[in-house]
Image (cartoon, rainbow, N blue to C red; front, side, top):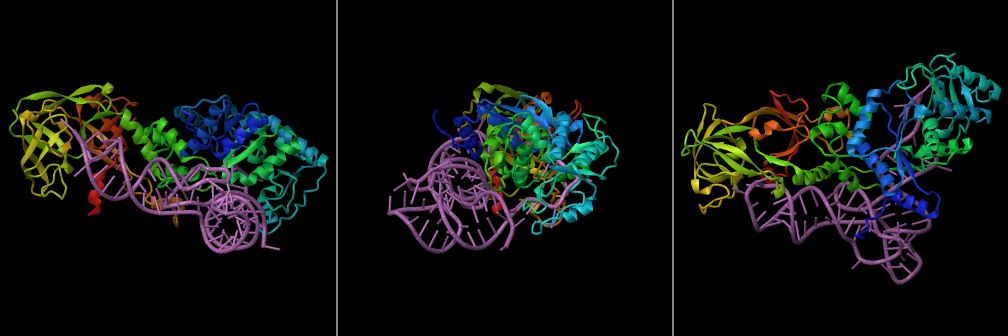
Length: 553
RNA sequence: UGGGUUAUGGUGUAAUGGUAACACAACAGAUUUUGAUUCUGUCUUUCUAGGUUCGAAUCCUAGUAACCCAACCA
């Protein structure tokens, strides 16, 4: 039990802080902006922040960073909460940066009074020019030296709606020649005559990220404020605000965000996929969003395991999506119910089986005996997978071919005696004889066969739509490809099978049940399902050693 | 001579001056009424060059490469 897992760098910091007595307990936060859906990259941050809270008996707040009313909506707030709950975490408090607008406004006044902030009238274009560049120092704005009284008056007027959007801004007075671009008098308040999803029309000035985030952390007494690497340059400003406002010193720590092969993670790009119709919505099963993964059949447990395995560090990474799939299969293999479904059917007729006969055969529901068994109807005419028959068998082939024998899962061994084709050369039926003594569970035939295939009785089969998903992008790292990332979309990322045949027991499937369709992969019911038409999503394929063998030749 | 961050197998992550390890991927084999699962094995690693040391992934010096920063976005 004392098997010690090494700590990541944030855990090391926390343990040192706890040990030194700097903090009695820790408080973290997850701070999404409600302008999009959460994706697997957010899951890494959620698992980190909430995981730390749990591990060190601290707490974690959920705080919506809602300082930009033009992009933020309540719809997103709800989906974000759903996703976090689904992942299995609960927050100590639900807060909003907008809860602090009064306090933040007072902070701005404080800064003005300390001559550390001023109202600027120049345009965005002029400001960009005066800002300089990473290699060129910036220049002061002509309005930089307004008196404190004038700034107070002007800022109050801004708040009172006396100006139009963009006419004036409040800037921190720091250093236009600073090597850190963010310290060159950053804007801290801007005018936006926009309706806010929570404060309505109370405000027409809104604080910028840098003047809201750190202060919000401080107001909540967040001890460890964890964010991604691109915020490293912001830390200096984060600390400047805390110091000059003389408020609770939260500390910011940065880790490398998750990147995953064959997908994109930027909200902007994901939004584009949705709005331009490349996918059906935020919860399209091909999307790397949590709602997409959920709809596709992923379990929260598998995502948490994945986040645990990828670790937390500061270097850029590109995680192979097969690791996520591994975590998923590992769980689903243990927990999912087994069933048979034929996706690309061809008829198999057992010539020596009585025409009117039907048997109810017993089949196990899963690897664990506790999962029990079910019965599956068997009869003379079956559907089997077209790819399980080869007119001219390949090397190492051990499924159906003229003259070969296979076992029908949980049923009998059959021998292929012949087949029929239509004018186009397409196989229309496979003719077999069965060996009565080979019945599953009581096989006295003494015959052993290498191949076992799945099947569904034609007379009892239920029809279903099955959606097969593949990776959304062809390239390993679509974001790094030349040109528009959308040019790299995999045209075969969705394959819809309209008429798959499934065993009758699947007709009672519910949205939360997970199945392994024998030899075909893991599947779950899609929300598009109706009583008349069942729709299944393929969550993930099974590992396919034969597929690899075929590819080699 | 802008500033900042990071460099360990194909991909991630450990090793905190003392045998470079774990997982995924890949490859080979065994078992199998799922070509799944399970089991066994193989492959490949410290950015470069110097230095300190009995001993360096780790410390020092000098390079190199990648990423981030010039939104009234977060």
